Amino acid sequence: MEIPTWIKPALMGAGAGAIAVAIVGFNWGGWMTENAANDMSSENSKMAVATALMPYCLQNSKNDPNSMDVLAKFGEANSYKRRGIVEDAGWATPLGAEKPDRELAEACQNALAEKI
Image 1: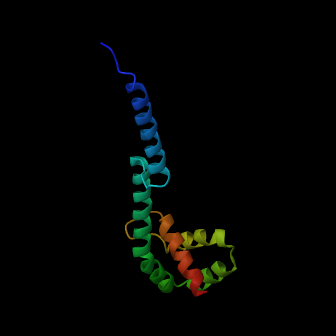
Image 2 (image 1 turned 45 degrees about the horizontal axis):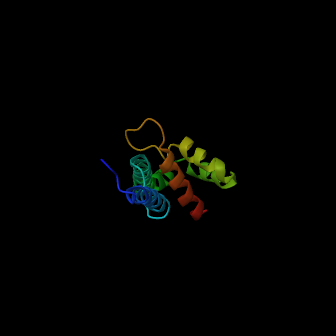
């Protein structure tokens, strides 16, 4: 069986086109792999939960009898230590959880920093 001479350039052009489409699609077209989509979805859901629970954290800060001491310590602390202060105070521990939620503590410390 004889293969026509035009087949080789056509196949090379189709291959190069497929590679070019993949490069453009993943870099500028918004395409992503399943793992990247799962990671982005997981991060977005964590942030949504933290945003929804932030009023709970702020209310805990108001109801805490030691809130004045904790807020004074919070105001004096560097920005990278503030999340730990919120976690240690127990304000970022959701009901039924044994340890504080990191994203909730981050959202709560941002909200508290705006108020101070």
